[in-house]
Amino acid sequence: MFVTIQELESAINFWRQNAPPAGDEHALSAEVSALAKPYAILIMQGAQRMPLDLMGPLAQLAIQQYQTAIS
Image (tube, rainbow, N blue to C red; front, side, top):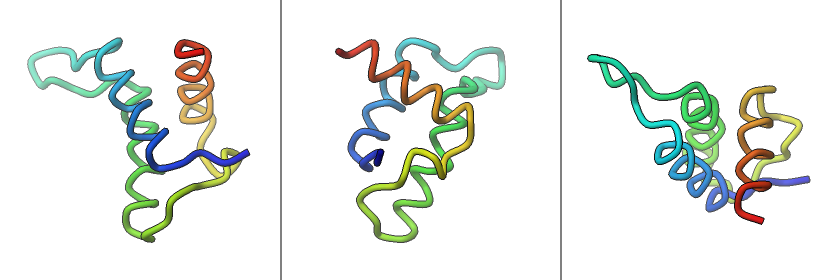
């Protein structure tokens, strides 16, 4: 299964709304932080999609929860 850059961006926005930055330092949620790395990799490589199994476990979970929430 592949995740597109557009889906990653939507998932990041979903998590930013549902788990907003916290504390005085406005730290990103664990889900947003986990999704930021594969998103950055796709941007740097100029790629449009990434295999889900190449993402870390928390990023995979965040994507799956996002997909479930929007379906």
